Image (cartoon, rainbow, N blue to C red; front, side, top):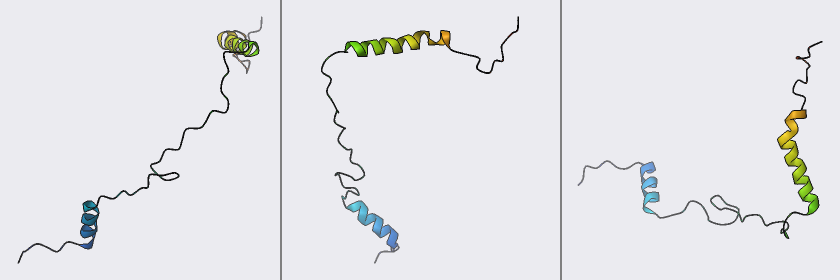
Length: 83
């Protein structure tokens, strides 16, 4: 006869789960632990830039580079000095 205390029901449930090799998720579509397929491309690029797109890119870069020179940096007019 052993003098061990009787395990509680919680301990017995825990030990049962520890002894089993069971996955608690399903590796499949639409469940936790599954990564979906990456989205497919809508269209494939057929080469470099077209002339129209090259002009658009040039205009966007010009605004990025020089736009601050023409920007209104004092929209409330707080720095207007009367001469």
